Image (cartoon, rainbow, N blue to C red; front, side, top):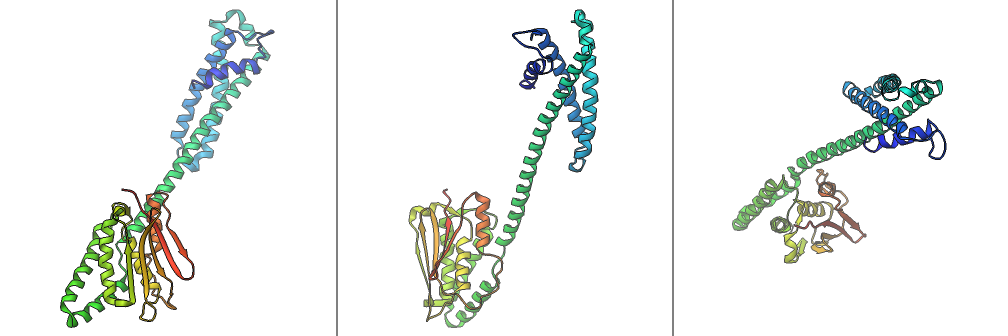
Length: 333
């Protein structure tokens, strides 16, 4: 209003009244003040009508109805109000020019200017209104999408691969009669893994140091099961342990490597965990099984989606025929 009303008050006498600076009719203060008063009053009244119509018809399905009622009401009020203001001004401040105020040319020019002002008001306010509505709609859609994704990930994080539990219980049952002490260690490490799952299920990110401690326990379980058929080499600098990653990501990647690849004495599986260019990398030699266990839904998509919740961090996957490599971003603490 502070910008548009003074500007319109200057433009309208030139465009609709034919006023000029160098020839009659001259653009004087009387023209400017008359237009300024009229434009201000019409603007405020029409703005109130706009606000009332939006409150009266707030729903999206009522937009067409609102625009019709709003436009007709504003048009009637604008034309009637413009002539009434001219009448009042002609009887009070400009009595000497009262006949000019109600000449045919002046009425046509004045009402045309009022309608032009009305169109400007509607364009400005409706544009702002729909831009805000669009922005709110996009933000609401994004919020619902993120909430849905968060709920889905919360459900995923509470799941445990039933094959992992089944295989470890089988390993434990064979250890108990053969090596009771090792069986006790096995139960402790298994308990440590499951305790970690419960502790971090609501966390968005955790220290790499904590994740590595659980990875060691997880590796102990796998090494007990596969023996020398599985080789896990970890090379993480001490300084990198202060960074963060999404919880259970290494366990998921290790689980995927075991599930999708052959692990045998003839074809041992080699898994290498290291850091490279601000990312944590897990790489394994590629020896894909002909048949794999049915997926439980916990995998690379889980990790990708959780990184999306944290920002624009990207999980990179590389497969070259000989190896399969997953690079997950390290988050600075």
